[in-house]
Image (cartoon, rainbow, N blue to C red):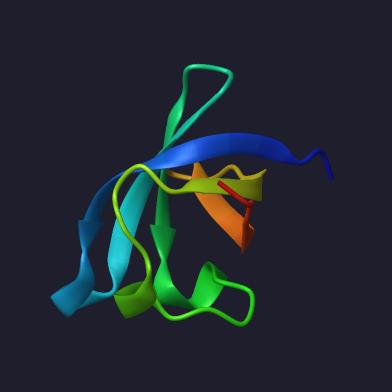
Length: 69
């Protein structure tokens, strides 16, 4: 599965989800369960991440890891 780099564009921490804008220009949704050893409350908008995409009813980020800033 291809890994994509991007930045977090929006977080809804109290509901456990957010959005990432990838270097490919596509925005994808993610849920707390897609984070690798992370918690959504420790993340912020603009943070760089790397992830894989699962396609279905909408593109969803999976296996999200933080990148050093």
